[in-house]
Length: 306
Image (cartoon, one colour):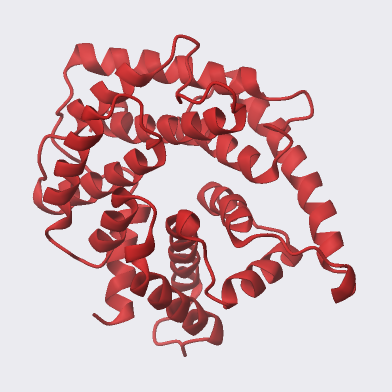
């Protein structure tokens, strides 16, 4: 399939924000979902350190802050938490990119997954990333050496970047070297999708390629996740929800919101967060951020009254 069609389909999967779908959730389940979302937001804010970070990590802080933004909570507490995170991430990037801009024998390269998680937040929020960071992203991603666990986030960033380039390009504009670079990297990542760490991520990529069978495979995978009492699969649930969402936008889809929302409600902990690893707070924050992003997607259309 030509890369231009892959990317157009990828936009449907990864950039779709508020397509009109059948109102699958009843009033009671919608209410439970909104309450769970509120508890999740509160828990993530409570985990934030005084300096605006989550676990002193720029990438994890960007991930958690994006979850708050995705949840669409306009409370003063959530807005303040995001503002603190912006300051922390900005300061952290200033230090990191200063280190990276030194002589090569003194530099400490940032991992491509780290850069992707931060850029994802910037791109989704419509903010401009620091120029030095953009240079480092191009350098880090140029090799195509992307860890399997980070492949879908990198792909999402590439698709978001490509959308941005298409929006500013004049009709019939000459394809730039940057566009070609993004397309070639996407091709390499797609070719290696079998190495992705979860079924959900692979199905998200296949859905982006236009594979009509990805939806039914995603439903089967969701059934397997429901049977897994405490699996470490909150990121996978997010990517599965993207598959379902895209399918619903194109062909009406199948009932998926209720079972997925029910599963998220069942897995929410008493403190409002998600995740099973008690002695790894960073993992719990990451899991909770993925779960909150999934929950926000499940409730998006109902909350907008479409």
